[in-house]
Image (cartoon, rainbow over all chains, first blue to last red):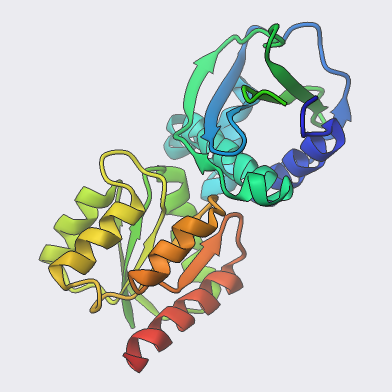
Length: 153
Length: 128
């Protein structure tokens, strides 16, 4: 059984996205599949707990996220080119806060470097243990977060 | 006024740290930026830096490796360091403390927390 409850994953992710990127998101049911324009940042962690956290966002939300984090306008060049970097950094912060909330085991984990991919599928695989949370913003755009553990529990 | 070096592989994070510096009330003369530990060493060799704000997880040379290299060269005791990271690993923090880095700021952080961490690092440097 996964050591992570969906409510904790949802609360931590929403809190970090609000604090770091001023994103106000509401919990939403997990879709059957993520929209095709979804960009995801996957960040592995190792140690007492092993697995990967993936943060998902619509591609057209990335300039806005970057602009809020950089303090520039969404149409500025910096916001347009640093959207994926912004998502990578957010996934980095989410996984750090989340692991700290999982007690001593989580705090002792090493965090890897985030990587970007596109158009993901839900990653519920046999033998793995996953926890997923989904959100929508004020415009109905879908965001998500997924943690897959590869430890045996 | 301080000459600051910000070390982080994320250009977004480097900008956020620079903005937080402005909001923290710390008197800053200039901000240099590096994308990894190797670039940071080159800047430290070429410029006078009053304080380094450094991420832990970076490619090429991470923050812990950078501080170890600085300590081995003997320049680590000259430049105060604030580590800024999403990592909460007690073993990493203990190792950094052994290397003389006692100021560790966890992400996310507020500008005032950055200001306090810088004051702590500078105060510790003066005490040495």
